[in-house]
Image (cartoon, rainbow, N blue to C red; front, side):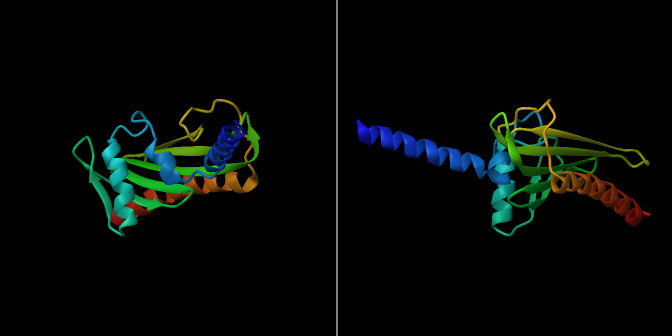
Length: 165
């Protein structure tokens, strides 16, 4: 009986450690289809496999166009879903857990058009993709990373517009 109890406690401890050390690739594999309707589960897995093989991570999406994952690190990713949509994500570890939440996913969508109009939306999720509706305490560095992400999208969009002219 002691062995079963010790084994159960060890398994629980390992599960807790792995839950605290999630990587963006793990979180991205589980993203709901409703957040990235352009991509199938296979598309998402292909992105990761292509980047792991040092290949261009480009797939034909569900709408028949091309989508490309341009960056994937342990705590971030960027995907050009189409000419009109850029998705970026950050995985941030909280300094103080909130209701047992130790990491949050920053999900940013930038909608682009050929005009001067650009709109972006940033939402926070738990790593298992539950929308966070309450205020989450982020430190200054984390807030700066989110602002830099938004600024990157603006600058990238402006740069693309200038290069087309």
